[in-house]
Image 1 (cartoon, helix red, strand yellow):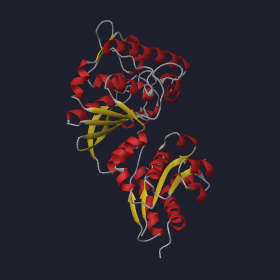
Image 2 (cartoon, helix red, strand yellow):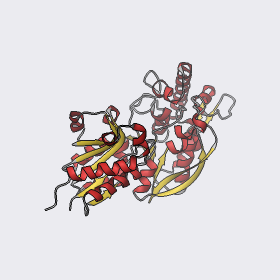
Image 3 (cartoon, one colour):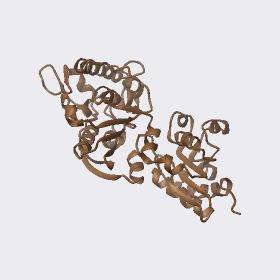
Image 4 (cartoon, helix red, strand yellow):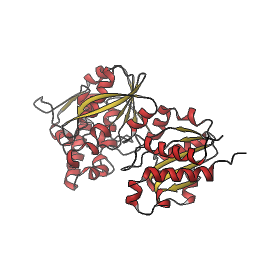
Amino acid sequence: MPRVLVAPDKFKGSLTAPEVAAAVARGLTAGRPGVEVSCLPVADGGDGTLAAALAAGYEAVPVPATGPTGEPVQTAYARLGDVAVVEMADVSGLGRLPGGRFAPRTATSRGTGEVVAAALAAGARRIVLGIGGSATTDGGAGLLQALGAQLLDADGAPVGPGGGGLERLARVDVSGVATALQGAEVVVACDVDNPLTGPAGAAAVYGPQKGADPDDVAYLDGCLARLADAVAEATGRDLRDEPGAGAAGGVGFAALAVLGAQLRPGIDLLLDLLGFDRLVADADLVVVGEGSLDEQSLRGKAPVGVARRTRAAGVPAVVAVCGRRDLDDAALREAGIDAAHALTDLEPDPARCMAEAGPLLERLAQRIAAEHLPTPT
């Protein structure tokens, strides 16, 4: 019987990646009884990263931490052996803003640092940090403070939270961070190449998505420059212009400049962690997916990343499932995807697609079984 690997991302606002994979698996087995189906939910470093790690066999380790506006939240990291996976979105992300109210000047990455610190204290030797979906533009200041750095004003007092707190920054002491890290490796899932400051920087490009108006953007950009100056003085290296320094409101900068982190494309990093190459080796078909298959998908999003790795492994066919499809056949083929099946093919009403995504995915998967799996002899 044919072997299928189902490796989708989430359908945002509708189904988690494990739920998508389960629905597709049910449809495939209904459409082709006896087919061998393996499920590997994936993520690209943003929200859903924890869920993907847990579905792949990592253990959840609960951690209380500071939310983006200072309120306590309950989060977790995922652990397997000495590897810990930390999802910034689950502790310092937009979804953690109370009432959905933006806090562009005061949102802090401290909670992310607290989760990293907890994993290190528990013995993790490799930290994989997914930084997509952040609510912050603080240059990673909160993260550094949670890991033992001192960010001080002219009077020697700690600066306040968020990018706005950096207005008073006079001096940085990062000596405590090395004690927290204890030689552990930090790898960051990062899919952008923005610098920390300037017209392509964290505040200018991503600040408006986090509630920053033009005055906020100019103010935060100046605050981030102040942080970069202080870190350069403390470390002897100025990395504000490094590609990816502007990721997650500047957490990329903190990770590069102080944690000595390596930045890697999110989907490739997660596929390595989840053991994708081993699972895909004997597959006849791989099913990828996400809620919207569109131009953004071509910029390193999960389905295209999985398709690329699948083709490299020599698997004969890749098929996508999605909520809606905005790519033509030529663009799909260029991305390594043979065909795409959308929920809107079955149900034109987007609201019903969201509400009934599971059953509709099962029906799509039955169609995939009929059209894309070899007929038994």
